[in-house]
Amino acid sequence: MSAWTATIEKLREGGLYCEAWGIRGERAAADLENALSVKLPSAVATFVEELGNLRIDPFDVCIAGDSAGTIGAVAATKSLQETSGEPLPLDCMQIMEHAGEVYILRAATGAVAAYEALRVVQGHETLEWACFKDFLDWVVVEAQRFQYAGDLGL
Figure 1 (cartoon, rainbow, N blue to C red):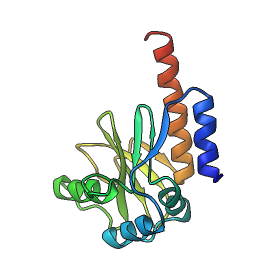
Figure 2 (cartoon, rainbow, N blue to C red):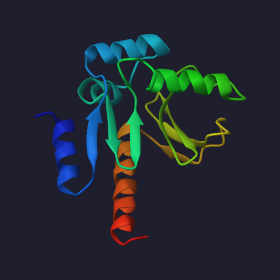
Figure 3 (tube, helix red, strand yellow):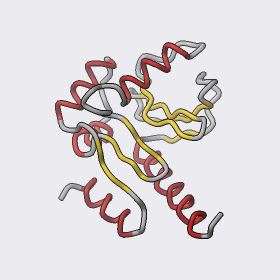
């Protein structure tokens, strides 16, 4: 059992809805690197190879996407580049969208930043994480908060 699979099992045991979905594998990671002309940080490459994408209700970390190529970091990043008022650095890729914010991974550093969806401009980050793992830890904590609020009927 991989470390990612073990983590998903732990999250499920803790009562979170959690599932890997979409395409995955070494080919998915290589295709993503080629399409976006980036070198994935090792933690992200392993994530794509083993999980592809990860839904932890209510969040959906969507990197590898689906086999049709209609969703995932490639489609989201290209759409964001077309609609963004300012050009994004070349090593940026969108890995999640939630509640009016987009989450961008900087492939060169492995850092992740959140932006208001209508203002994706460097210097206007709403949240920042030093690495992909820190970002995923935050996603889990926030999902647990959502679940707790739901359990209380809020």
